Image (cartoon, rainbow, N blue to C red; front, side, top):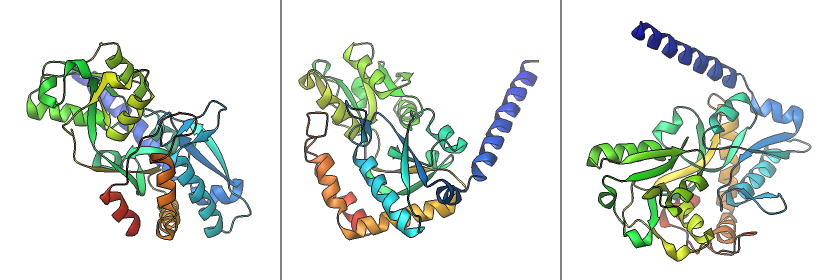
Length: 293
């Protein structure tokens, strides 16, 4: 009976996934843009890529890039107008919102890897990251081996869950992996001493440390959990015409060279509404990608 019950649940989940995928593939984003004149953009609470300021304005590096993409799309598609509607999304529901049509593109900081490409399509890259972990400096946790037998928080819906689990298995760390809903919740567990560390993209951890009440209380791991990986704008699977138009727009933006000024504004100058400066120079990998997207 238990095996029959398990097979029933697997069958149900597969049916739901098939229906969702079929519905997503029926959405023609380019046609809808021409009909509505509106691009639905997903954003998060993930400075410097996308966030809200105190006045409720949605802004960030990825947001400004998508605003330029929208302007470029309007020209490419010869549309009289193309407005942007911003929709808040979480790591756990972003693919669901894409598939339902509630957003057309996620303009944030999603890792483009094989696991994620099974459920969504990506644009050309707009940043490169490595996964590291943050811990309280007083505990002197700098490598994965330092965390052996301890607990690590991760955000549900991120690829970091699988990455930490893989490192846990391969290095036999006996970690207790603690999934939570938001990045801030995962970070707060470290602050409160309820977990030993929080694993996430290094640039996002650096931003959260800088925003904390006492940045000197935290340390970023010396050891990277993963090699350098690309970030991209996330789109529905099966909507290749839209993906190609977005990538055409990005090539135009990158090859004009003004992307470098955009990068400097968000990574080398004070973040609007945050009162912090990240001081993260452009990497050689990203600079080369902008030159030859």
